[in-house]
Image (tube, rainbow, N blue to C red):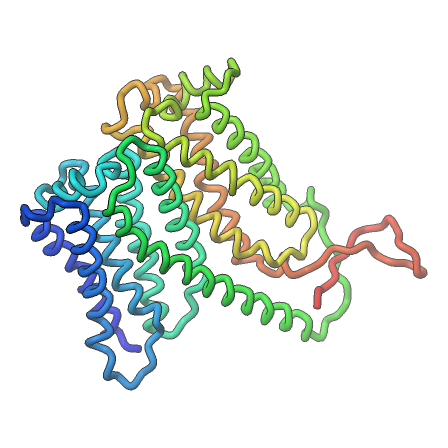
Length: 391
């Protein structure tokens, strides 16, 4: 696949600008059902443009290539929503935000739209370049699945809990959600195949001797990650108690003086902390186990997915805590102590998952080696643990 296809997808995504401006100017598009039908027709046309242009080429085209045209188009639409919410542009999505999805005209909705329009768009371009040059893009895909899936899960739960209710335009998210679900199956499958190949490569090496395994205290990066995951479990439960209005003095003081956004009347922080408690805490436990007991290759995919989810969640949460659409009493207080603690806690929750993902990609062999005890004279000894390559 040459760059021609990639350029076509890129130009197709820019069609979101004239489309949004035109639809905003059509006064008849005030009914929710008409908005839904118009959106679905537009998505169909956008997805079909690359196929119509490239269908006669002899080269085989990855099906995900056509999917990217819809995803990039959707990202540009999200960026337009964010820019209009902040007053940087006008007359593009105002009507849609009023009649279609008013819950996006919030601080959290704005920050989610910024992330979708910038970060997700960058990930799409990376995958588009990889597809164009027949290179692997599954690690980037898993990161995107975590980020995209998390944002949609928070949005859906917040809408169900919110006062605006569920309208027909919410179904416009369905095509992208279905696509992400189908692609997640593919990405996980390809990652599993990659894991099997790496295991075979290790097993086929001539060096079959056991290698000494450094104890956990001699692996400083793993110690840092172990401390982080333990901290993340505690702070997640702590903030979940706060957002659920737990009657604990320390929790109430923290919510009032450090993160008053947890008391916001909109359901976004509550939805986010509920999801973090339900999904992140089990992941933290599994990752702690993988650090203590090396050889858990299945955790590699989850590390990438969590890194994407954590980055999206923390970006939206931190941005919303300062955004002008958040009521002043729910923004981070102006005191130096509050700002320091806020950035320290949320910065750790944002940065450490990215470091964990980087380490997993650059030291993947650690997750393919199994710790065992050394054996002397047919009996287990209490000597130095060793690493044994798994089959």
